[in-house]
Length: 522
Length: 117
Image (cartoon, rainbow over all chains, first blue to last red; front, top):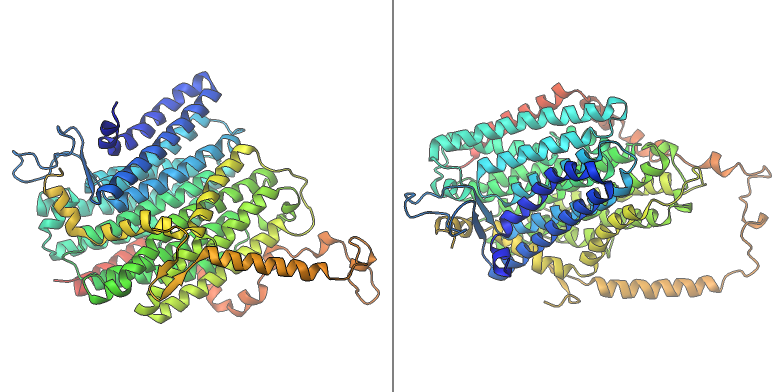
């Protein structure tokens, strides 16, 4: 297989590798557990490498990659006899898609390595890893596809695998209840999303996002679709006041799955931004849409952090913080959308979007790390109740350091990565509306206060539990995410120039996206 | 692109390496000041026990402030706000769906009125 062949087919390979690995896992697991672990880590590493190849290819070419399943050549989006309509399943991978694929595969790799020790005593591990890989397939498909129905299919794969994994520990039925709630709300949301797709298909005879965007007339029916899409994806991303499933689901899932649920929510956030900019961006009143996203963001930031402050379950507390941090992303990208097409976009709108998108990768890394540290604490102490913890820093030194790095990062303390993205958001949003920016800073202070509480309750004080440090594979999982936190904190220009700025520009350029697909893809 | 260069923001710049250097210098200064401190201090002796008006100190386990008690004043001051938040977090799936449908209806109305042409 030549390098060029690998690069050309990388959008398909990044789905095929974890998908085949998912179906192969139960088979290999029947023969040898060790072989199964090697199989899983190899497939997750290969997925990560393909994600980096896609990222590099899109960055170098400066335009979206188009990959058509079953077409010859692979990028023939509009065959000569199709009447100008893109047919088949088409993956449209721009800088924002490749950015999201990198985020999802990195956290999945860290989560997979972490799980080897963390879940070693659990039964039905083959099913756990198969579902973990399917969850990754769902996320990757959501962020890479250029087709709305295909997006729905991957959304469902992601939701079903996630719900099953939330219930994995059972936990006297509590985890099963959390998974049940998540499955119900996800199914209702998915049905609403499918209804919206049906309306668009009836109107425009197309499922391809670029095709629909090019034909968009923005009738009253389209406004109904816009509400169905944005509210459903907002709910899936965990935005307040549709967030209720988040503390249940994140709180009861195993540590690595909680970290992956963060990126799963971000895949829905990607969907929200993609439909807002690419599908409706050219026809809709982006100011209304932008303000809707901003209001969701502000509510999520404030209510999320204040709810986190009163929690005494470490995972639920972190889940509320995940909601709060999603608010920053919604705020940043919402400001970009509200100013799209105006002079203000170039002044500060694009910077706000960059801040929001930068916060996606930062949040995935530090929140992922924090969930892994919470999982490590629960693994050793056996409870998630902070009231029953204390003094863990005496013996769990590495976990304590990882927790401190994650906590300082989420609170936006320099020089960690959370500070860089928050700084971009504060400054740009201040120019849009100072009140929103001040509110974002207050939320950061409350975030710090909340994590001081966790640090004091779990790690400080006299030694209550006679426990030792977690096994090496769990530490390696945490170290992978810590590496990116420090890298993007000390060298934010690397993330901004290679990952974030191209992603923001790609998202803000729906015409480039449409032209690439409808121009034939070559 | 210089990875060590300034991180430009809409109103200025940020340089984490410079910040780290300043932080390390301050850390060194703090260490030097600490080194000049009281040399007769001995950890783990009576010198380090808190003075409680002649009473003996309680055990460390007994005085460790638990998570449920931290920020008690803050939550007390915002009692009304928190009682509202607690009330809407019922944990009942019907309510979860209700909120989703409610927001969907609200957004439908907003988009139909101001969604664009």
